[in-house]
Length: 69
Image (cartoon, rainbow, N blue to C red; front, side, top):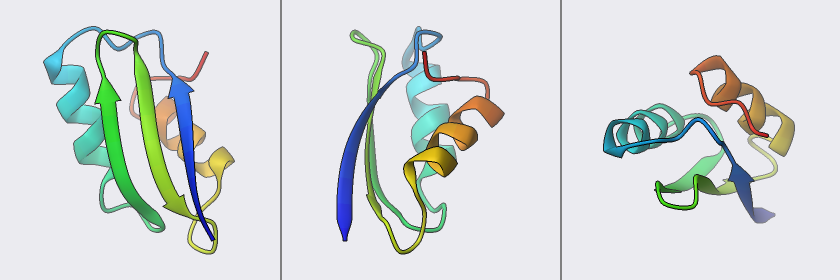
C-alpha cells in the first residue's frame, strides 16, 4: 500500500537543504517520491509500506541532519 506523509523538519532553510533531503531519501528502499517545500519546511514523502515505514523515514531524516519536529 502506498502512503503519503507530510513531515515538518524545522531545520530546512535553503535550496541546498532541499537538494540534500531529496537526494538522500530518493532511492531509499520503499520511497517512491520526495518533495521538499523550503518555505513551509515540509517534506512530502510517498512510500510503499511493504518497503519502509514512517518511523524509518523519520529516522533517515534525523540521520542526515533534519529531525522531524
